[in-house]
Image 1 (cartoon, rainbow, N blue to C red):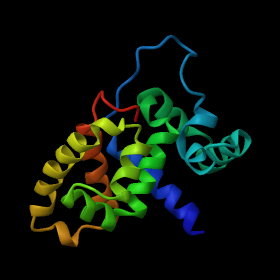
Image 2 (tube, rainbow, N blue to C red):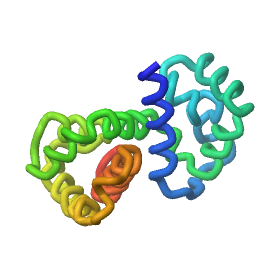
Image 3 (cartoon, helix red, strand yellow):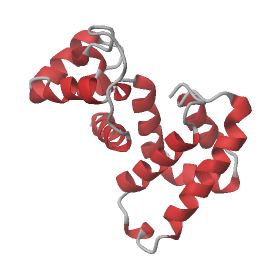
Length: 165
């Protein structure tokens, strides 16, 4: 049950953390919304029939189709996995980001598709952005999902155009 809850929270985090914009692609060249997007893809990234079934059962596939049309970049298992990893390891990840190194930080950067030669610079940028978040007086009162969302946004901004994520 914890895995399903974590995957649902990761999918919500990923979708909330990303800007919405349509891709410049020809019709039919993007992801399959029923198997590659939405909650189904987050829960069952390697089992198409289960992803499709989950998306249809959840909300008749509405969320999956909307995400495929309005923000196709969310239809990436890599982004969902990164969001889930951030959520699952946030406390350790925050400590390691502050110090500039550690296995959780390396894992997040690798999962996001960042070349190891860029890890130092990207982690410095994430640390600078997160310093503003941590300095917020309400930071300690924020739920983990909100803290994780801020971290994901900081990573996404720091890695813009430089990582596969």
